[in-house]
Image (cartoon, rainbow, N blue to C red):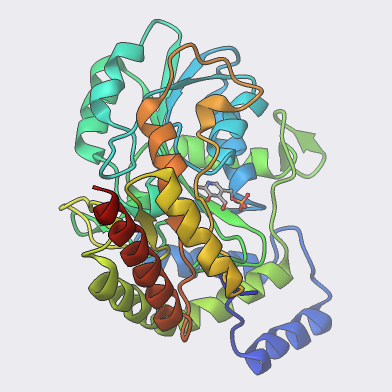
Length: 365
Ligand SMILES: Cc1ncc(COP(=O)(O)O)c(C=O)c1O
């Protein structure tokens, strides 16, 4: 079976040499030398400061909300993302309030944010969906006007800059998942970038159980560390990022060229650039999407309906307004596998199936 994502395995010998080093030092975890090196190298590579590695993207989101210290308050967020974007808010005892997305960019529509702000609102939590930069300037204006924090979920945007700066530079806090399926990974893992220096210092203590010095617990903390093996994987991946980027770009361009006249592609923020992390395609309706998905499955190709369900339908959230745009996009989107070799067959099946469907429709008409 071919899946949407294929885990990238960096050079085995390089990884082994890190493992040898770990065996000699005997240092497996607790902010070891490889974690420190990875954090430094990531800051340099991405052009960011105050970056902390965290155990997973979900943990990084929860960590950000914990730092907000705003139990019971409201966070305005997108209904169209991976489930963690919402579940982290609920898990940290805050209330998610949804603002519907734009149907072309799939990102939270700033026009829908302001009407949801009230005295209980503490933050806006958008996601750069499929690496497409949100309308950062407009979100920033709204946040400043109402004195709110902005927490970005940039999990899909390792390869994205906004106005020339890496996208993790934006927002009060920004998180990115380094899960094994991502363009850059540490097996499990993530990072958080924190704008405010004092909050960053506090975050380091929170990440370490709240321990600020030997025999001293300064505050309530968590264990959100990554270990030396994960850091070693990250260091190996960083060395091969240029290759990973080039291969994904080639695949993305192959699909774009062949599919752009048949399906709708995501509208990319003009202040940013195309991310090559995913290839989402939008069909005219759910029935087209289902027929294409079935045709692909017959060839053992598993495309995914990312992101379904629309998060306003989660069983643990209360949402009185229906997020129509998000539900509509969720019902007719497919993310197709993007890795060397599979593209010709996938695009051929999609074009063949759509041609058949549309021929049938024109016969009936
Ligand atoms: C947008 C988004 N946010 C958060 C996460 C959660 O990351 P993790 O799997 O590292 O917990 C994911 C995971 O794929 C994601 O796609």
